[in-house]
Length: 251
Image (tube, one colour):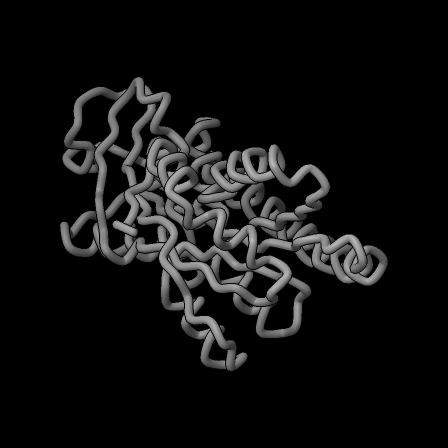
């Protein structure tokens, strides 16, 4: 089964990356054709995609003509695309380092703002208990997001190192959302996943990790997204974010 996991993962990641570049190319065309309509293009870390869709639904209740496109990937991949002139108007990262990097390199006027604080969960479907770390000794396969491009993967790697934990097979996906999918679909025995993705469906072993390194920052890239940017920081939206499994900072 390990051999098939490797093959499936490589194929999946290649397809995922091709889709990302294809969507970005499409955004160039859409932006050029619909600029008068003030379409907003948002780049979002994969862990926050589901919550962002809920926020957009709320926003469009009072902004019925708003056209909002989103593309989801790891924060590292999106940062690279933004620094290479991808046509995004707003970037919601899974950390604060990457928005700060963009702020400095692009010499933007408005500094990054924390919009949420993520929570990482070790999830072992089919098992029970709350101290899942102790069960990893009996686990054959564990999935985490790529620590080089995904903040959630970086924190997961640090937890494993701090607790001197090694598993028989460690799988890395390109972003945190994929780590969740691999765990949910039973392709691995356990996974470090965003808590927001399993917060409302915990029926097995789940251990929660709060970490200051999962403070999530956003950066306004173009002024036409300023209204939506402010909406994310509103008390109403911050409550929605908190109910979706995140911590928030006092406003």
